[in-house]
Amino acid sequence: MEKEKKVQAIHNATMNVMENVGLIVHNPEIIELFKKNGIKTQGKRVFLKENQIMEWLKKAPTEFKIHARNNKYDMLVGGDNIEFGPGNSGTTIMTDYDGTERDPNYDDFTKFLKLTHVSEHFNINSGNVTPYEIKSEVPFPHMLYSMIDHSDKCIFGGNGGKVESQRIVDMLKIVFGEKEVKEKAYSLSIVSSASPLQYDKNMTDTLIECSKNNQAVVISPAVMAGSTGPVTVAGSIVVSNAESILGAVMTQMVKPGSPVIYGSATSSSDMRNGSFSIGSPESALCVDYAAELAKMYGLPSRGGGTLVDARNLSIQSAYEAMMILFSTVNSGINYVLHTAGFLGAYNSMSLEKFVVDMELLDMVKKYKEGLDVSENDLAVDVIKEIGPGGEFITSMHTYGNFKKSAYFPDLSIRGPVIGKDQEKVYHENIKKKMDKMLNSYEKPYFPKDTKSQLVKYLEEKGYQL
Image 1 (cartoon, rainbow, N blue to C red):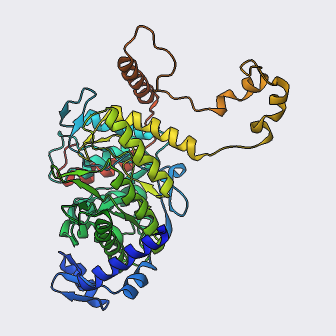
Image 2: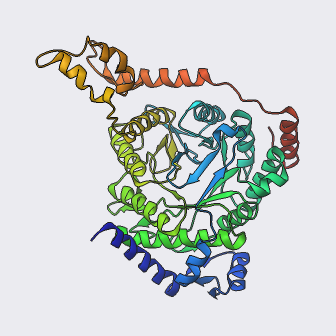
Image 3: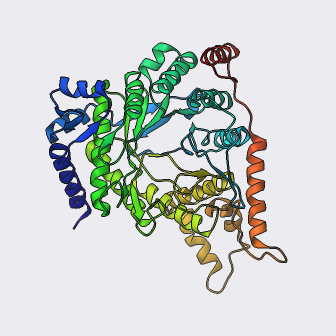
């Protein structure tokens, strides 16, 4: 069957599920919105017909901009553009190079902030891990303060419910102004469904607070085929699609035109042990079909990254990461959330893998640039000059073009390594690259009065900065 027909089959199945099975929403405010707009409800369960769905999806922007403190980092989300993000802001496990897992500390957090800030790959910063030193039940606003202090790139928001979302919006208004926040998106937050076919109150509260304040959300089902979805990949994509569509519809009911990204973190389960598997061919397929379905609905898409099941930096992490990243870029995903540093099926972060993944991204981007066929690149005159049996290494054409004709890695080992352990050399290369990036970091300008207002606001909320 042609791919287009497969996408249509998934859409048809999804419409059937949404109209006849329905989805549960554990939020009275959202249920009232459905009733107000003529959507069938039974208690907490909502049932949408295809024509209703498509009408609401038409209200969402096909592309939108997220604004940064420094406008050179503004992000265009949608169309043919692809933006990369390092990760989310909630991981609670750090994995060191030797595979040791531990609690992340504030130094880890700031290193990720600095690496992300100096990397040319990212226009958005997140911090990636939650430092154990932050004791608040709602830790993200404290992290957001550090994020704004260390970087003037776009802001990745939290996903902890109403209080957290309200505080994020309050802080954005302090930094950018209340009027501006109402009119422009300055942050991107995750709204995850509770598969199968449910949304809890925390996530819908996040959706409400962000959408009514015009801040972008990425709807992120993570259906696990065989446990929270049918064991067949197509069946789990149907469940994931229904959840992502419902999330997008809810944003438009809260505020028509509010920015939303159709997302998917759906993949398979390993039925031998029940573990969620994201570094798999099934994960790549889910990314591919998420991109196609989002295009069908006229929404920007999110998916993929350097996703792995491996628990440490290893051969396994390398081949899994490259497979998912390559398929992500080829599929036309607009926003890649987990581009660098993740291990263990979203469970941990690694500074070393973060650096390695940026090299993978360099390689994939070089491939996507394609082949130049200018007169200079075809080099017919040079081939004629050298002729059969000659050599090109001493040619002036080689001298004038070698720096831009091939990709030169910072980490990968090429050629002989005499008398040295290759793994040790590779680790040294990672450390050199990381140190170089950290040493090049310069803290961006942050107005003192704005900083003081943020500090005052957070101290009033009980944070110890």
